[in-house]
Length: 367
Image 1 (spheres, helix red, strand yellow):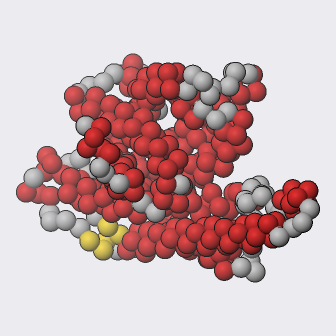
Image 2 (cartoon, helix red, strand yellow):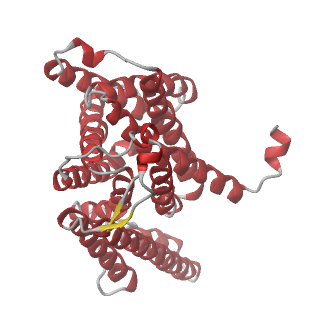
């Protein structure tokens, strides 16, 4: 098995991993929609989901990160608690309420805005520089504007049905798992935007934490532990009916296990591996594939209809995503060329002490 893996090029492994990643996460949008239509509690379900994710991640974190895991302090625990609240509890809470009022395709489409929102947050926090006098800066700003415009179109304009599958009357049991009627589209879209904001906040705020606590699996395991506590406390206060805590069918068991083990634990492990080897831009480029897969799955299994506003908004968001990626790629190329110029300058200096002075005067990338 190891010999066969050695024959596969590294780049091919990354592409295979990202296809598995997006297939697993696209499936989760549909699986979650099915779970909601089965009547699962929107608070108890993520509680069970994160218990399973924690049980899968914690042992790996304990054994794989023994040597690089820093000592645990009160400061770290407070940061893990807050990041768990923003990145998991609020994030998943907004998502599940948003999905309940919209559709799997729309939920997936709005997630394409995360790179643009992350760029805005990083710029506001001075973690990212915006150079409007350079092509990369203009491209990233245009991408952000396109993503925001797409989110507004999705929220404010539903529009007529653009495409719908054949009448479900031929197979009512199969299509009964589809979108529930009588939901509030605008409220759902606002929740999905909140989901994207929380996801972006998680990405931005964890960056300084991981510099001091580089054990990523351990960090996520602690955040997941606190999310379990938070969801448990919230659900205990709101879901007083014991039937809300019961799992009533094998279908519900499957949805919980899929969301916990595939959409949380497996997807996160793949993401860490790919980011380390291919970089965050490589991961972002695959986001539209998730939307396409989610749309295909939702149409075939749920009989989902597509609305004009959702299609126009998704197109703008995906266009914005690629503009932001293009801008980041241009920025990386510019900084690489700049480093080469300074490296050549350093080699021409007679006094070796001056090179360190020049290096200290250069602004660090992204600062």
